[in-house]
Length: 394
Image (cartoon, rainbow, N blue to C red):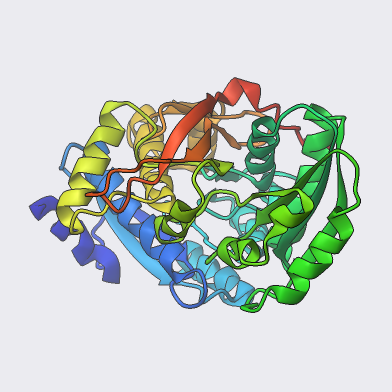
């Protein structure tokens, strides 16, 4: 803990010569604040774990500067310019908000310095707008929906999607269409409902979805793609079962998942749930997080930050402390690195981290003494099963 406090002192960036300087850029203000806090917690815990408490790599003390883009892409871009230019960081990590991450990609290219994205999910980050200075430890929208598609039964189905009207939602729907073409030729999306990001009344959206699905052929599914507090419970209050509609709410953070307990047997896919992976890193993360945070286990953005730390420490160890961009890129392309989910690997073609995903079921009989005992593992979707397309031109 003493070493962790020492590195936290560098958050104002009073770095010394030879220190390994990293800018962590997040959306600490706004709707994604909880995601950013989890990412930061996971990153610092991961650095503690993977450096064995030394908070140094190859003799270089870690100096971390945490910056808040406030969910403003222009600010996210300028913060990265300052980090590269004024602070001369070795590389930058983070970005919670996909629009901010996308705005920052060309900055990495212009400065020829590394940016590791976590947890922003827009496919374009390692797709159409990618450049060779960009890596991503976080999963992409396409990885999410490919795992979700594998969770659906292979049968004729009509699917409606309820999602948010911004890049996350529209990217998710586009990715889902592509995923269904790859995996489930018998299923198709018949209706798309895009709600404003801050919607709280889902009555009109729910009625439009149910009107579109009630006479549709095959198994009827409503898939919810949502960042933040999920409308799942409010949709269930409209009783979609009247029309034979099953609801797939998707993964979410633990406070949201707790609302799923009223619907045992509900299934979906998720990037990480604290009780699923079985490995020393996850065991340590769960135990230490419960110790530090009043018994609460880590959430999936915490795991993402921890995985980000694993990538940073592995890369700098592999280069023996060198952090010039070309040396790092050569080391990181195809590099495997440890995470609480198990081993991930950066794909050489687009620097996307290939990783396992999980199909879950809400427990019928959770542990009454543990409010965070919510899901049971239906199956692990291995990284090799997720046939993530490579963007044209890579």
